[in-house]
Length: 278
Image 1 (cartoon, rainbow, N blue to C red):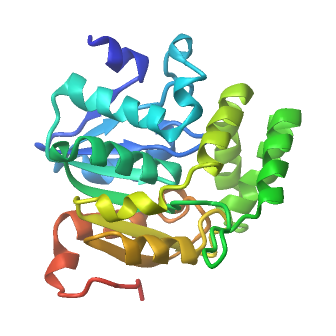
Image 2 (cartoon, rainbow, N blue to C red):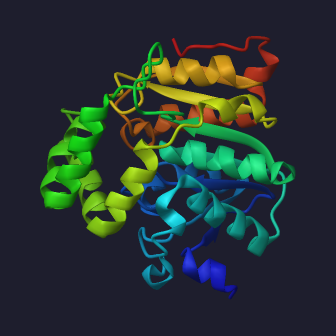
Image 3 (cartoon, rainbow, N blue to C red):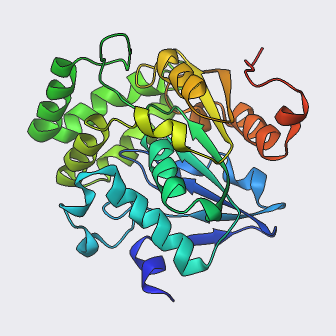
């Protein structure tokens, strides 16, 4: 087996020829996609992986300098694409992986067919007229809490960002995902995420993309999704009925439907470039 596939714990599933790569967000691993992947296995080839430092990746390959920025995580994506000789892929990124996927697509556009951003944000920090959802003090507090007691912070965060009070088991699942990540890795990933600003890169993206925006998402407010839509060529925006930051966990059926509508061109054929879920 190729060493990159071992390093990133790459799994290849499904019976189709069209490749879909699912990229997890902060504090998670490929297991976070388990609620939706079965719906794609009959018609697609599904690629799952863990970023170095997450899940069952090879932690010995973790380089703090490399992964101090999102470009380091984009290198993981490109390494996997090259190791498997992939092209014309659908890339589905959750949260920070939306921008990681964009970085990879800017570096290697010929490998990408479409991008799906779930709960994306090009910048989490508020900046003059731009509302990213957090001020500088908020972000510094997050870093302090992760450094002081990552498990306690995770326990507090999981139900808030999941935002499914009638399904507490989903918050429990998310908390378990968070706690499986090494605290030092989690802090470095958080710092790379919250310090990033990719607003100026959006205009350079030449790959069609979909922004899936959850309702009432404290991590990625509607303003962030609208900014991406307005500043990215060929970007489609859908505001989902799902609440919280993890619609692929909380509302898998809606998430599956929206992804398939986009990658099967149903949305493009409608003639509208700015659609909201009813």
